[in-house]
Length: 285
Image (cartoon, rainbow, N blue to C red; front, side, top):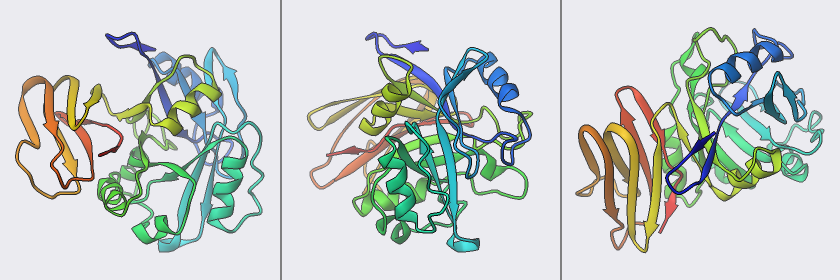
């Protein structure tokens, strides 16, 4: 658990992992030991079509989870369910909206997984409702025979069309051994480490995604104040392709300020420190 200068608690969570219950190489016990030793506060085992209940393994909190995949090839869409109070029982659903509704009906949050890897379109997303977040970074989508880990263009184009999803960084680990594990996570601001508190924070947008850097974004009217761990780039991205004062670069910078332009509708922050990134959620004007 990380506590910021204002006393806010942030829990480091890996929201998308696979065990040998489905197609992952490690057992739940092996995964829990590895992530606990690396400083994680909680993980979610999201095995394909296999509901994993909330529990504790080796002193690490396990948030309930499952992953559903719908459709083959370029029509595929993977939907992750997090923090359900009971099994969504969506195994017989062949309709994406029905899967999302089942997840939400069980008290969970529905996350659209690796949209770039899946070649999901804005139109695919517009056809659905009830999605809480999507993955801007998915580590396994850069491993094996895949090389499409970043979904920033999808996130931005959805926002241009009025869909402001929460932004996750995840492993979606299958291989482990440093190949696709512990490369992306979510820092969740919550009062306690329970499924209910974590999912409540996720649904309200109280988190940021990271591969290492820390980022806090505070809004005062139309001014956005960005504070980070030492980094080399702090960038503001919005529905405008180019505007001045958007990107600050330097050695060990920790702060940037930006003011919404009159006709900007939304923005998000991306921090870079070498090859490591962090992302804020979308801030709507």
